[in-house]
Amino acid sequence: MKIQVGESDFDPGAEISALHAGQPRVGAVASFVGLVRDLNEGDSVTTLTLEHYPAMTEKSLRAIVDEAGERWSILDATVIHRVGRLQPLDRIVFVGVASMHRGDAFAACEFIMDYLKTRAPFWKKEGTPQGERWVEARSSDETAAERWKG
Amino acid sequence: MKVKVLYFAKLREKFGIENEVIELPGERAYAAAIVDLLRKRGEPWSTELALDSGNRMAVNQTLAGIVTPVQDGDEIAIFPPVTGG
Image (cartoon, rainbow over all chains, first blue to last red; front, side, top):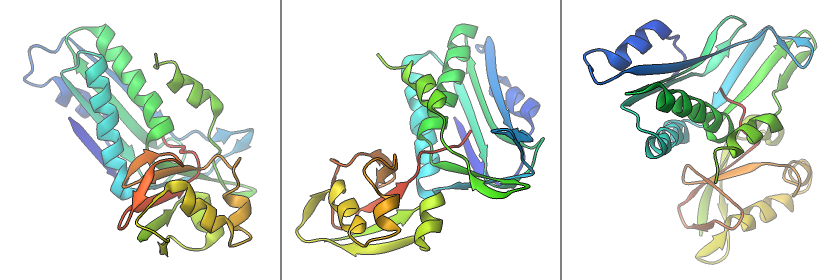
């Protein structure tokens, strides 16, 4: 498992390759890349600043990946989340999951993203022409995470 | 008992501090006791920490609720709903 939280960018292709390099049992790698959009709530966004709770962030991401590993058969996983000041077109987050078959990789990747969005301690502040504002949590994200229960 | 309380994002800005040490009577308490104490400070604490504010808590870097027990030396974080990803 690889968990990385920091300001530096990442190479999605390299991360995907690393998830199966020298691992002949891996038959599937599913991945997700989240990007900074230039539009939110109808306003143009020029900057996105990500704050986090350093002592808790990696711990919570590790717990989310562990939980995915209890639900699906996964062979390896990578979660990278950037913090600090970003701008439209920048990559924010990478989740990659390697497994024997695609079903486990797809499901675990989506689960990790849904839980990351509702449980990992990150907060976004966006800069718009009207000034800076904290991004409000979306109930649709909570609904997406809830469907994995039960 | 003394606990360290951390604030993040909008709460950190509204309160103007990142963290502080708070003293509570007794050896153990529920996390709710800390929020109750802070709310009594008046504005902006009472508004930002209102019962319906939707804020979340973590005790020792794990998501917690108002009935999570806390004890001397614990690290309590109070923050708005997370918005990463």
